[in-house]
Image 1 (tube, one colour):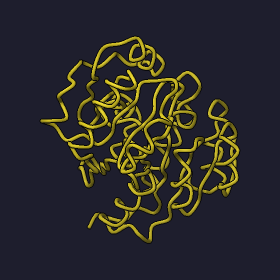
Image 2 (image 1 turned 180 degrees about the vertical axis):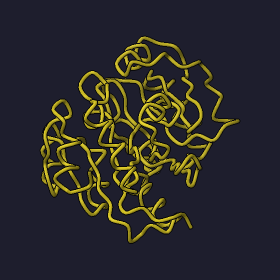
Image 3 (image 1 turned 30 degrees about the horizontal axis):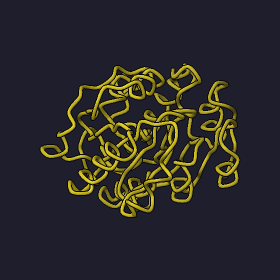
Length: 259
């Protein structure tokens, strides 16, 4: 069992810890340093994979992440949970996407990202999140565990839900849809972490702005919505702080007495 922190704070990225330019405000960086000095553990909780945010983890000196909407959990640099998608299911959705939908895929695990083909939708999406287009390997799922897929499209995901009831589909940006095992979520990742590390009685806080934070807000003790959050999430929040561009993270941490 790990030494218990005084509290744990989970941070969504896009629209939350990231400002509108995908940067972390200096006030947020300073707040994270103060949290750690107070034995309060900051953890990223994001739809992105750990390898996508390696630079951010280095910059913030955060070594724990609920990644890919809870499909992998890394605590203090150690993988403690991974929710792999069945290879047969991946094969089915790959062929359905290619043959019937003409929608390219991204294949993700906590160490790497590959795409099924290099297309304009792939370029548009990865440019949107300021990342290079990953290498092409449409057979990677046969040799590597895959925890999440992306549908690289602006529409069309509604055609998948009846065909793939074992999967969950959540639109995360205008240009992609997150796909993972049904029942997987940031909330499930948090529960896995708390149970496996013996932290079930540690106070938990979470910051978020979108619908992929909904279950997380229902799981933590203190859900905090950004002022720029969707209204449905604000309705679930204990507190609505300022925007992601106006020191919302630091202001809320100060309000709750964490820094």
